[in-house]
Length: 61
Image (cartoon, rainbow, N blue to C red; front, side, top):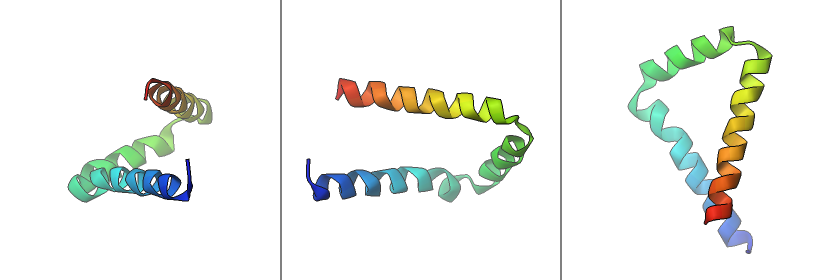
């Protein structure tokens, strides 16, 4: 793995992260409002689940 691969992965993350706000801005605002009301522990669990899913996908690839 080199810098090119890392920057390519980062670029893909930014593209994917930008898809929902670009295509569904009102829904994203609604989700952000609901996230503000979520407890810190719930947000941590969601973050942990996301990291685990990412690690599993990375392992598969």
